[in-house]
Length: 427
View (cartoon, one colour):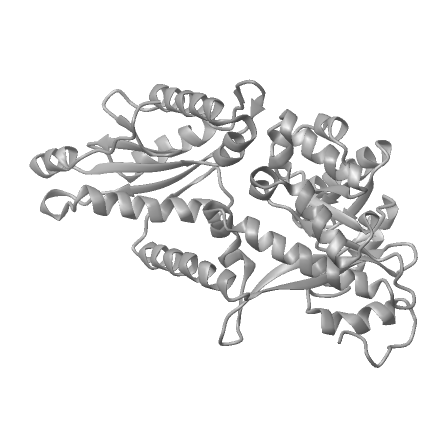
């Protein structure tokens, strides 16, 4: 891979002279870091070259493709307009829905920020255009990745907010501002609490909570998610070990999300083993939730990590199943024991036949493979009734409880299991 390059102001000077507009596409490869960490830097470089080839064959003859840095590319479109840039961005997203065949199959999408310069003397500098396109790219990532967003001046404030959050994340780690909140997982047949899922929350010095949607993606992109994730894992293991000593809670399970970067960047098996030992929690109580993107790397390292976790006695679950590009064959290839149906399908299944079909199919396939199924996002009784028809095992959602601190969740656990509340509970 050649050294990164960036366009200068020459194209902008031409736009000024011609009284035309210049389009700029800022392209960031989704999940590139995961592939690079899974297969190594040589394969990562191969992927960058393959991505560059796709871009070159997709853009117009007069357009310029440049690699800015890392997994970021720029496309410069002279003499264009908003419609033209949107069309090209859509074509690029489409070609990146196809997998890359390297030493394994890798699915890498493209998040694209689009900006179009003003005409004539109003044309700004290349640096300003790149900054604006970068801000739009983050908007595309926030909207779900593998898509594009057209720049709007309001996004500049969002870009500044990203920098503020990034700096705040470092301070939050330093000052131990991350907490574990818990949401119950209900056994559908008995109505008792089967387990809890630990969810990270960031409490600011002023006492306010920063919503996860405002910092999780940035924490993943910056690599800080590994430190945050380990903090939540350790605290949750300690808390659930205490709860399991309470009447009626001996079999309580704990579910914890593991990001792709945690999975690839740290010795996850050793981290989990240490957390369990320090907390005095049985490995059989812990379910680690992984995303489909982790399985999509399909590498020997991925399989080795999963096998190592299973050898500890820890269970593995696939979170938000059905929302990614993964194949059902991954459920057979890896030691997965549970599938969590994404909330968007559960929320729509009573009103939309397509969502209902997805839920029914996922439950049926998981059951056939000997896996348990958790339905997320259950908010209405009619959803419970519908899930009962499919014999879905476990239910999670606002109908039963919102995520809450350990002290507040204690009474919910005991009330569900119909036992009294010890005076010292949660202390």
